[in-house]
Length: 373
Length: 144
Ligand SMILES: Cc1ncc(C[n+]2csc(CCOP(=O)(O)OP(=O)(O)O)c2C)c(N)n1
Ligand SMILES: [Mg+2]
Image (tube, rainbow over all chains, first blue to last red; front, side, top):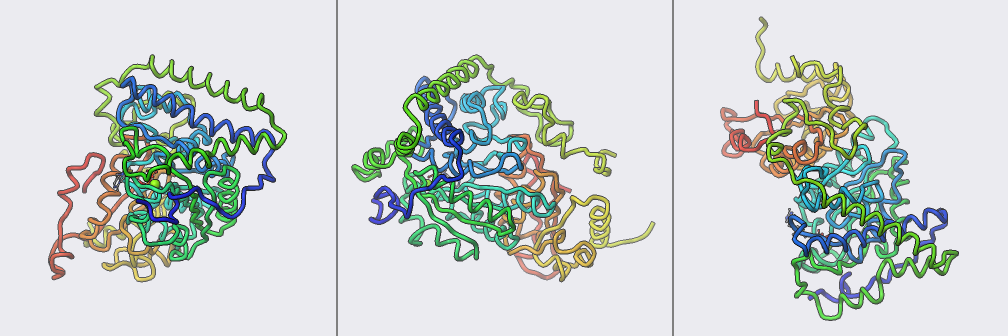
C-alpha cells in the first residue's frame, strides 16, 4: 500500500493554482482542445483494443492529460524546441503536431504508420516537428536529450529540449547519468518527472527513500520545482519558467509534476494493488479536465465554446479511425531494409511528404567526403 | 609510406576530421587537457577547445546516449571509452538505442564509439578485454 503522505494517497494540495496571465483566450481554448483530444483519442483506442485491432499493449494517460499538455505547451515551436515523450505523454506529442491518424496507425501497426509497423503505440518521432521517439528502456531518453540539447548549445542555437520521465524511471542509471552530464554541461534541458504515484504496480515509497522527487535536483546542482500536474495552467507556468531559464543559459531544471495514474499500467492491468477508494477519490476530486472546464466557465468561456471543441475532436478522431482502419498492414519485404544508411535510405515517410527527412538533411551533405568513396 | 602506430593514426584521423568538419566533436573521460588515458586525443583540446573536446563524467551510458542525441541533430560525435572493457556499462544505450535508431524511427545516428582493447597492458581482467564480438550480434552497428 502507498505510504501515507506519498503522492498517490491523496490528491495533491500544492502551493498555488496557475495564474495564466500571459495566455490569450485562443491559447486557453487550445489547451482544452489538446487535453480533450488526448482523452478522447485514448478512449477510441480502447474501443479498437477491445475489438483486437490494436497490436500490443494500450497505455492510458487518463487523469494525467494536464501535465503533458501544459508542459509541452511551454515550448516554443517556432524556435524549433524538441521534446521526448514517454508512454503517458501522448498529449505532449499532439501539442508538437502529432496527428490522430498517425497515433491510431501506430497502435494498429499499419504499414503506413510512421514506423511502418516496426514500432508500436506512440513510439515514434519527427525531428521536423520536434519530438523524438522513445525506446522502451526507461531513462534512456535523458542522455539522448542531453546530447540533443548539447548540440543546441554547441551551435549557439536558441533552442530548448524537454524530456519526460516517470517516477519509476528516476531510479535508473541512465536517468542519473544523463541529468548529471546535462547539468555539468549546462545544457538547455528541462526534465519533467511525472510523478503519478506508481511504476507498474510499485508505489513511490518502494521506488525511493527521497521525500519528494524534486529533492533530487539538489544533488545535481540544478534548479528544481514542484507543481500540481493536474492543473494545466500550473504545469504550463512552471515549465515556462524552466524553458525561459534554459534558453537564457541557466541550464537544466528538474520539475516534479504531481499527478495520478487512474488506469493500470496498461489495459491488461487490473490494479489489484491499489488501495480501495484511491482511484475514485482522484477521479472525483481531481480530474484535470473537469478542473480546467470549471475554471474556463468561471472566466469568460461558456459551454458552447467547449462543445464546439468537443465536436471538432470527435470529427478528427472519427476521420483518423476510418483512415487507419483502411490502411494496409506492413509489406513483409519492408522488414529487412533501412538498418544502415547504406544501401541508400528508404523513401520518405508519407506523413512528411514534401519535407526533407532528417536523414536527407543530415546525411550525405557535400561536406561528408570520406564516406562514399 | 610513413609508419605510424594505430594510436597515432587514430589521432591523425581525429585532427583531420575535426579540421574538415566542424560538426565532428569528441567526448569521453579525461580526453581533454590530459589527452586521454592512452593519449589518443593529445593536443586536440589545445587546438579545438573544450566545446569540441568534452571531458565527461564517468558515465558511459551518458557518453553514448548524448552522442546519439547530438548525432540525430547533425553532429558527428566520436566517443572514447577509456578502456573498451567499460563499454559494458553503455551496452543498453548502444544496442537498444543507437543501433535501432535508423531502423525503428528513421533517426540518423552517425557516431563513432572507440576505445583500446586487448591485453599486453598488464591490466588484469577488466582492462584487457576484447568485447567486440558481442556487438556483432547487433544489427545496426558496424564494427571495425
Ligand atoms: C529499463 C526498463 N526496465 C523495465 C521496464 C518495464 N517497464 C515499463 S513501464 C514500467 C513502469 C514505469 O513507471 P514510471 O517510470 O513511473 O512511468 P509510468 O508508467 O508511471 O508513466 C516498467 C517497469 C522498462 N521499460 N525499462
Ligand atoms: Mg509512474
